[in-house]
Image (tube, rainbow, N blue to C red; front, top):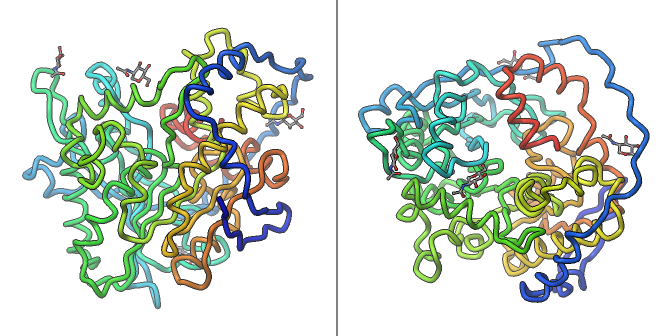
Length: 445
Ligand SMILES: *[C@@H]1O[C@H](CO)[C@@H](O)[C@H](O)[C@H]1NC(C)=O
Ligand SMILES: *[C@@H]1O[C@H](CO)[C@@H](O)[C@H](O)[C@H]1NC(C)=O
Ligand SMILES: *[C@@H]1O[C@H](CO)[C@@H](O)[C@H](O)[C@H]1NC(C)=O
Ligand SMILES: *[C@@H]1O[C@H](CO)[C@@H](O)[C@H](O)[C@H]1NC(C)=O
């Protein structure tokens, strides 16, 4: 595999990866090697680290954007899990950006059983009654040109996630009073935004983080077709490359979990037919099986060592019941060499998953070697190199196919993965406990 690397980060050298992907081993062999991985022992205990310094909240640091409920949605049955109205946050563009739009799908895992969805229904991820009334717009949603050089003056929309199936389900459970209406929410939101001016857009980006990044891949071509042919439409998927990988115990843990989501919420009919014609619907919920069939130009942003996948897929608590990997998962400097080897294998699978995709000229790629999950919407983690890469690709300033060298060569990651900036910590104080826990689980591990 030859990946053309056109990017050079100041403190982190991107190198051409010719051999790594070929090191990928097929499942059979992996099962054997993983059995011994399970035995991996962590490195010796570190000295305790000092508590973080106290901070003072400064609201002027953030652009806070209010939540708007989609009032017409109920008549279309486009409702959150609990039957409440779905919503979005819109900050209007200005000047040269007033006819350009970014739509960002919010992420937040999935619910895969009636019980799971019942619990979610009383959180911000299942009901607008529990959503924050305003959200900070940072990173790619920011209106500061220093932070967001190419899109700061665009119309920027964050679409709230309250269906639990990546905006793609269709169904309901009358007994449990649960609505699985992700697909209808997506349609209602688009209708509303079209009426608010998006139908006259000259340029549009459909993006998303995590389970929202899965939505942006699923809906990319459909969205393209809703807009006039003269509108430039491109899609971005940030931390959506959930690999259909086997975990420490040799199980397809994530495949089971996503399969349950697809079945419970009636997702199959809304998945791209280019995949469902040839594969099982559960497999078609995995972006790795969708990206090659997407016709609209697509940009994939993902960490090679995606922290969510480490935590909840390949080294989930059920795969590591004794917590042997806990310290390695919290801080990679505590991983033993045997554990590092396992992480490198995950990276090889990631590179293999984007190999064919990356050969298409219209696509863009940014696979860095940090231990993070979702990078476009974080002030501290939206490195200028990434911001510029997305812009360069969108405006065809150059081809972007960036793959970072393997850990530990990237010295820029420490800030990104683990250190909460003062402003982010301040922000988290503002938010309710559920949100805080969710962010902790999904983003900062
Ligand atoms: C960002 O938007 C806010 C609210 O609309 C505005 O007060 C602020 O001046 C804007 N910042 C910049 C840099 O345009
Ligand atoms: C609907 O919810 C009830 C619990 O209220 C549960 O017993 C039943 O299995 C659910 N039906 C389906 C099809 O999931
Ligand atoms: C659903 O997901 C949870 C984790 O969120 C997991 O513990 C559970 O086993 C999953 N259930 C199914 C049926 O996959
Ligand atoms: C990870 O461990 C290294 C080495 O002990 C330390 O310097 C670093 O601060 C740790 N990071 C976090 C977030 O604890």
